[in-house]
Length: 385
Image (tube, rainbow, N blue to C red; front, side):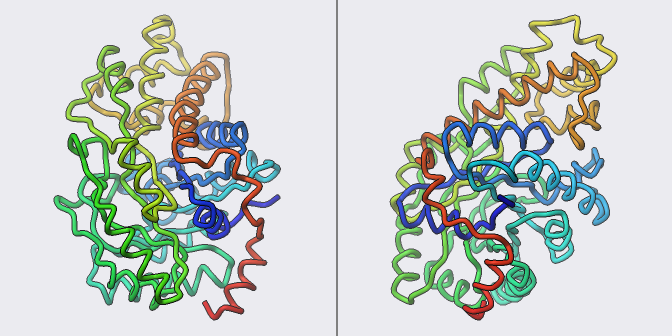
């Protein structure tokens, strides 16, 4: 079946009391691995390409400076990969834009095959955030594409998203935002943080999603709640990276105990990026440690050189430009490249599979009402959204 919009997947999570993990991917092989591990657990799939991930997948190693043209190319590359491995999948697959910056980024993603988009207007004044999100909702819903907005500010750093401190989401403002924008999902600020350095012992303010959910229900409004900045940053992986020559310091995640307690409080979608980055980086370091002859490989030796030059970098995008055709198009020219791809895929499956189980989405694929983009466009039109 073609890729599906986000709304039916999150409707099932809301109705049945589990959370759906949403996992960021930055290479064709990562998308393949993420879909395969969801199939193994019979879980619905939400794959995310961040706005700057589209620039990276468009061939821009300095993705922070990516142009609209880079993002259009990259969105198509991600879309092609997810369709290749997901269109005939036995589980529903969503391709979601994470942290879209503006209307141009949203249009680039939708043109590339994304079935859901997030527009991040959280740094704007409330009225401007509403106006931008509503504009995206109009454009996306006409095409059957689901929309996630954001209200409240998360501290931390991830791609172009940066804030020194958090601003918690006001439940009454959240109701007003959902009513005025018609968004399908809302990312809220309740104590999570972007990036690998979240601070030890983070306690989530579960009363915030509880209050938002109660207020939305009282007003008869449907909207899923999303937890950004929710990577768990497994300590064992950080330790292994450092034992293999890395230098990752002050890395702390949100504990699984805290995240799992947020699910009955009303959280339906949990975004994870850093866990995957760490597992993939660990696996690449381990490969070159275990097989030192690959450091001189004509095809993948450049990956090792970048790993060695950047011990404190946890993001595989810093190392993978050395094999850009493999990243963007899935081209595997030789055995050495296949060996590297295999360990990248294994890292994705380790991080994602763990959280499928912890968040409770395993076995839930049959609960999702499958809907095409055209069918969703008709439903949005009938609902006046």
